[in-house]
Amino acid sequence: MKQTKSKQSVRAQVRSANLKKVSAAFGLVLTLAAVGAVGYYGYATDKGGIATDDKEPVATTAPQTEDVPEEVEVYEPDGEYSETVTWWKAGVEDYDFAEVTTTQAAAAATTTKKTTTTKAETTKAAKKTTTKAASKKKATVEEVNGLKVYATAAVNVRSGADTSYDKLGTLSPDTEVSVTGKTANGWYRIKYGDKTGYVSAEYFTEEKPAAATTAATTKAAKKETKATTAETTAKKKATTTTAAPKTVKSATISYTDEEFEMLCYVLQGEVGNCSEESKIAVANVVINRVKSGRFGANIKAVLTAPNQFTAISGYYDGSKVPSQNTRDCALRALQGEDNSNGATYYYAPKYCGGATAAWFESLTFCLEIDGQRYFK
Image (cartoon, rainbow, N blue to C red; front, top):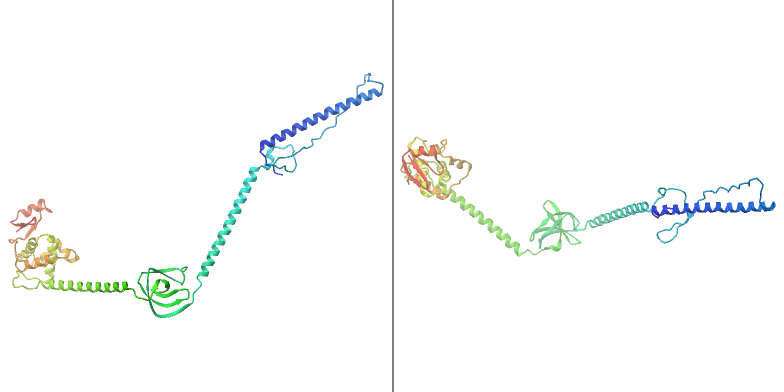
C-alpha cells in the first residue's frame, strides 16, 4: 500500500515504533528476572531454606527475543483508516509518496484530454467535409434558350449551383446576361467569359433597367462627341499645316512644309512662353541667317547646324509641340513681318554670362525683348 503522508510523519511513526519495541524488550527482561528469582527462592525453601553453601546458584538465561515487526495503522487524509501495513526498519526514501502519484495522475489526465480533443476535432472535420460534399451534389439543369436577364445588385458567379462552389467572378448591377439553363434550386446557368457559371436567380430581373438604358445612351453620346472632337482636331491640324504654302508672294524666302514645321518647333522651344514680339524676332533671326548665306542655304540647314538651335530636338522627338499662336507668329515672319533690325544673334543674360556674354556684347546691338538681347 502506498504511503500518502509526508516524510516527517513517517519518521515520527518509525521512532515511536522503535521506542515501543525497546520498552517491550526491557519489560520482558525485568519480568523474566523476577520469575527467576521467585523460582530460585522456591527451590531453596524446598531444601530447607535459603542456600548457605558456597555453591552459586545456576544463572538462568533469558530467551532471546526476535525483532518482530510491529503492525501500525496508517491514517489517510480522507478521514478513513487504510489497511494495516507492516513496517520494517527501512528509510523513508524506500517509500513512494503522494507527490509522485499526483504528478503521474495529472500527466495521465492531460494525455486523455488531448486524445479526446483530437478525436473530437477529427470527427468535426469529417462531418464538415461530408456536409460540403453533400451540398456540392450537382443540381438538375433545365435548358433555356433566348432568355436575357439583368442583375439587380452585385452578384457572384460560381462554378456550380450553390454557394459552396468556387467563385469565378462578380457581375455589376444592371449587367445583362444570357441564360442557358435553370436549376430546380433557383439558379441560372450562364456563359461567363469562356467558362460556364451559375448565379442566383433571385438577384435578376427580366425587365431592362431604365438606368442601364440611360447609361448606354450616355456612353454612346460620349463616344460620338469624342469622335467629333477628334475629327475637328484633325481637320484643324490639316488646315494649319496647309496654312504655310511652299511659296507666298510676300514671302522673303522659300521654304518647304517640313521646314515650316521645324521653325515652329524651334520657336516653341526657344520662346514658347514669351510674347508674340519675341517669337517674330527669333523667326526673323533664322530668316536673316538664310538670307546672309553664311549659316546655311535654307531653313533646315540653319536650324540643324551644330551647337546653334538646340530646340530642334523637339521636332525629332515630338516634345514641345508648337501652339497655334506660335504657328501664326512663324507664318507672319515668313510673310515679311520683321522687328529684328537685321539681327542674326540673340542671347538671354539671365542664362548666359562670362566670356559668352562678353562675346555677344562685342557685336552690334539691335534690340531687347522680354529680357533677351539681339545682335548682328
